[in-house]
Length: 167
Image 1: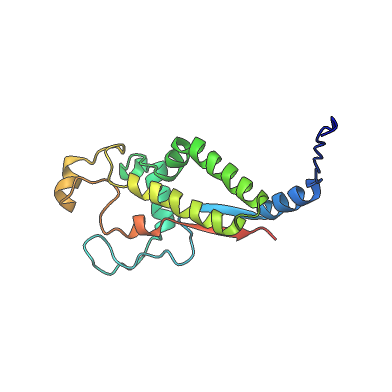
Image 2: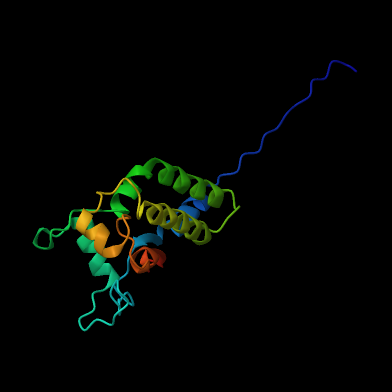
C-alpha cells in the first residue's frame, strides 16, 4: 500500500419534516380516563333491587371523589390520586410512545390504547384498598364488607379510557 488513508463518509438525512409529521400525528389524539356519563346508568341498588330514580356511575364517582357532607360520605377519590401517583411513569410511557413512532416502530393510537388500559387497571386496583378512608362500622354491617367503593362492582367496572381523535 502506498500510504493511502481510508476515507469515511457519513451521510446525514434531514428528518425534521418527518419528525414534525409524526409528532403532529400523536398530537391529534387525547387519552381520556374516567367514567363516561353516557350509558353509565345503574338500574339496581346494592341489594339488587330496581331503583326508581337511578344514579349514573359518573354521578356516583363524582360523589365518592368529592364526598357528600349532606350524606356523611367522605372523599374517596381514585382517579386523580392514581394519575398523580403514576405521573412520572405515565410521562415516561408517553416519551416511549413518541420515540417508537419517530422510529417507525409503532402506531401512536395503538400505543395510547395500551397506556389507557394500564392507567385504568391502576385506578381499579385502588378500589377497596387500604389507601381509601375506611368505612364506618354501620356501613360495614349494612353491606357485609369493609372494602370501600366495592358493593356490586358496577362503579369499578365503569372506569374506562377513550382514545379520542381531536379532529
